[in-house]
Amino acid sequence: MTMKKLLYLIAISLVIIGCKNTKTSEGEYVSQAPSFDEDSAYTYIAEQCAFGPRTMNSVAHDSCGDYIAEKFRGYGAKIYDQYADGELYDGTPIKMRNIIASFNPDAPTRLIISGHWDSRPWADHDSDEERHHTPIDGANDGGSSIGIMIEIARQLMIDANTKGDSALFRLNPDLGIDFICWDAEDCGTPAFAEDAKSGESTWCLGSQYWSGVRHVERYTARYAINLDMVGGNQTVFYREGYSMNYAPTIVDKVWGAAHRIGYGKYFSYDDNGGYVTDDHLQVNRGGIPCIDVIGTDAMSGGFPSTWHTVNDNIKNINRETLKAVGQTMLEVIWTEQ
Ligand code: AHN
Ligand code: ZN
Image (cartoon, rainbow, N blue to C red; front, side, top):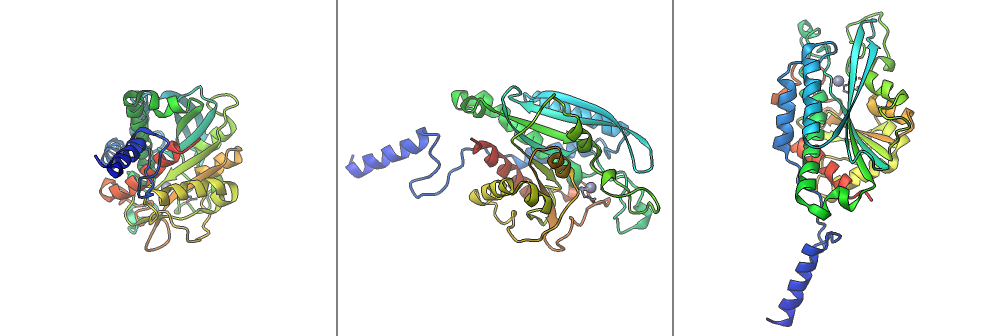
């Protein structure tokens, strides 16, 4: 063997052995994160949709809540259920359930990944007025965030079971992750309800409740990333206004991670300056820096074209978008110190 070959072999071995090595001999970045399986995430979305629309006080809602909790539990999470009473814009009482799935629950440094699991009771932005009172499947608006979160949980379980001493939580015992599934995000005042109470307080009821009453006393987290409409077609993510005001370094971290691993085309640095009333706002008001990764339609620049229409169903879920977001989340987790 020539000296050159020997040195080459040593260099390659160092790359393979050293888990701190993140560059190939060509200087290319190599992520240490596991590979996010978008087909698996897609299945979790289809399974949620199969219950029917997860609207407040419905059987489908309650059954799907059990399904979500069982999925996370099966992948090793400790489940906290936060049940609470709430009220719709018109005074209708609702039963809410925030589902918190914790990995490494006793670790002091915590990250939150969140998204809402309820679906909208009204397709009030459908092109057909006859359908404005029809509940929606919410495959993208609701299902997609939860599907991605369950798949990340599955990857955490695989990692813990196969990597021995190099598993994430053994390398980093002080780090814990909480997946928070918000209830009652999407029952804000419908467009057709004239003269009704409206405004931001009718949205995000589950996260509003949690921001006042935590699932664990004195709970806090280093930061939070909320996912919303993360599985649509022709989707792009812009840096959202409240996220930039409250948590610009977290925006940089997530957008930086996406660009580092090759998903830059999904995470745009163009400034569109939009502010969205979403669950992340409640988390920020509760004192934890939180960003919103929320899908925008690349063509219109507005919410996805299926938004609050009956077309927000499993047929319009895009696996590449799921992969871009899910892999970026894994990269963020795996590079957290
Ligand atoms: C409002 O329409 C007020 N907020 C958008 C938040 C949302 C609804 N995300 C999904 N559905
Ligand atoms: Zn919605």
